[in-house]
Amino acid sequence: MITAVVGRTFLDAYNNIKYNKQLTPKEFFIEEYFELFYNHSKYMQWVTNSPFVQMKAGQKSHLLTAKDRQEKLESLFEKISNEFPDASFALGFPASETKEFASTSGLVTDILIPSNEDEIYLSWIGSGLGIGVAGGYTLLFDDARITLQTYYGWKLYRKYLNDRTLEKLRGNQIGTWNGQWLAYSLSEDFDESFDFSILVDEKIFSIDPEKIEANTINWSKLFFSLSQLYPNEALTAYVYGFGQTNKTIGFIPFQLKSGTKLKSIYKQLTGKDSSISTNDFESLFGMHIKRACELGSIGLQALRPEALTKYMGESKNLSFKNDDDKTNYYVFKTWLIAMLNKNKEEVTEHTLELAKIILRYRNSGTKNDRKTLVENLFENKSKKGFIESLTIMVKDLGSEDLLVIKNLKDEIHLMTNEEFGYFSTLLKFDYAFLEKQS
Image 1 (cartoon, rainbow, N blue to C red):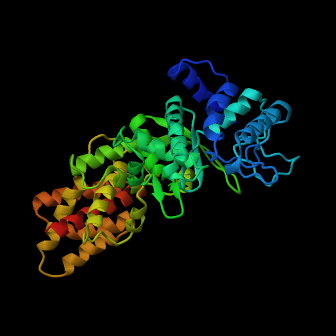
Image 2 (tube, rainbow, N blue to C red; image 1 turned 90 degrees about the vertical axis):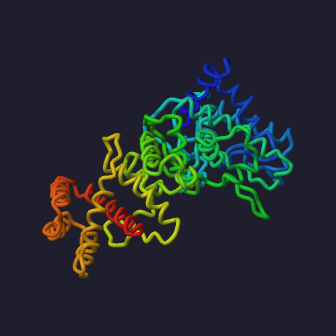
Image 3 (tube, one colour; image 1 turned 135 degrees about the vertical axis):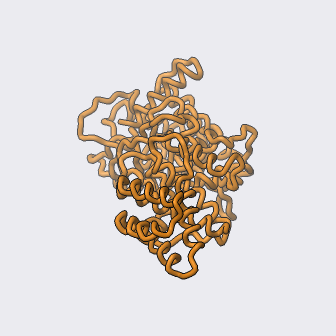
C-alpha cells in the first residue's frame, strides 16, 4: 500500500541520510512514532477502530494513564503479529469485512499484495506523513526530502500540544498541521526564529474562546512552497481522503515548475516591490482540489485564479475602483500570460500595446459609434466576431496602427479557441487598466 511505500522512503532517509541509524520500522514506531503520537493525553492522530481509540468501559483518551497507553500499544503488537491486516491497524489497507466495522476502504487494490509486519508499521509512519489540504483530501509524496521536512514538524506539533498555555489546542490534526508546516517552512518568507504568535499571525492557527486549532491549507499555497524546493520539476502525489466515506482519487502529477513560472512573471510585471504579500499572492490562485485533480495533472491550468472565471468569455470587466481590482489585474494578467506563453521564457506586453491602439482609436472619435464598436469587440466570444470588429476599425487607423491590427488579425486566426479566450480576456483587462489611467 502507498502508505507503507512512503513510510519506507522516509525511514530510509531518516536512517541513511539524516541520522546515520539502523532503526527497523518497529523500532522507529516504538521510539519515535508512538512516543510523539500516542504516549500523551492528547493524541496527534485518530485512527478509527485502531487499538489506540478502542476504549474500555469508562476510558477516555485524554484520561488514559501511561499504563493504559502501554496496554493499547501491546494490543497493536498482538494484532500485527497474529491477525490478517485490515484498516484498523494497517493504515491504508482494506477495512475488515469479518469484523463488520462501519467503515469504507481507501487506497486499496484487488491485486493480492503480500505484506509483512514491517509494512504494517511503515503504513503507520507513512500515514503520519499525509498532508491535509482544504477540500477534505490528503496528499502523499514518495519523496525523501518532503517526508523528512514533514517529520521535522512532528515534534513542534507535539510541543504545542503539551504546552500548558495552549491547553485549548486541538489534537488529532497531524495531517492539517503537516500541510501548514510544510508550506510555511519551505516558503521564501520562512523565519527560523518564529514562535507560536507568528504562526497565528500567518493564519496557521486560529484562536477563539472555545478552542485553538490548525487551519487547513489550500493546496495552491502548498504547491508554491514545494516549488521552492523543486523549482523546475514535477512530483507525483497520491490524493485521497479519510472520513465517514473514504475517497481515493489516485496518483496526480504536480507540475511544480508552474509555480516558479507564475512567480517569475508576476515579478517581471510588477517589479521587485510587489503591492501584496507572498501569502496574499499565493492565496489568489487555484481551483478546488477535486476539480484540479480531474484535469489529470496539476499545473498552470489548475492554478487558474477562481475569481477570474466570471470575467472570461463575458463582457464584465475590472472597474479599478478599489485596490483589490488592481491586485487582481496583475494576478489575472500573470496567469493569462503564463497560459499564452507556456513554452516561452520571455514575457511581452503585447496586449498592453494593442490596448493602447484600441483606446487611441476610441478617443479619436467624436461620436459614440467607436465606443460601441470597442464594447462589441470585447463582448465577442468567437474569433470570427472579434475579427469582424477589427475589420471595421481598420479603415480609421493610421498607417502604423493599421499594420499592427492587420498582424493581430492573422495572429487570432491561428489561435486555438482556448488561446483566444485567454488573449481576449487579457486584452480586455489591459484596456480597462489604460482607460482608468487616462
